Length: 149
Image (cartoon, rainbow, N blue to C red; front, top):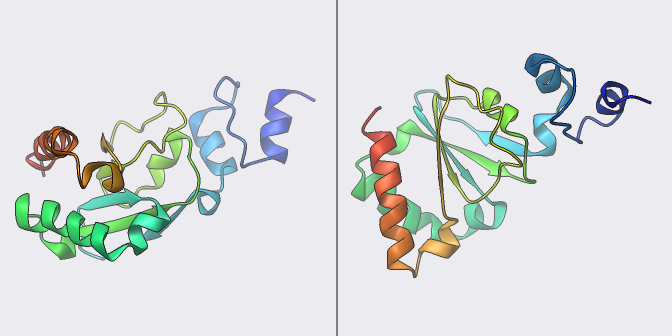
């Protein structure tokens, strides 16, 4: 069995070095195995979170403090993606907006990030909440990306 046949049989397995074109790989990978999108009609930004962080009131309040109060992003402009498993970067083509902020290390690789998607990877909320250095680093990265909106 060659790699192409294996990828077609087991779509949850991502094979980076195959002769498949990106669109074929994307059609074979099932996004629902990796991420659940909670979108808003007027959103401009998708925030990627772990399920336990999405459900944690303290962490979501911390996120609100950063994005809404600090960086002045209107709440109706933010959609969410709940990450169930680390995923191949090609799945960012399914991102409902042109900007994605990943609060955690979710990407299996960085080679196939779609050119039309601006991606900002920062620390998980649980790592940042009590660490001023990580907060400052994440803040600067997010500000740079959000200034482009």
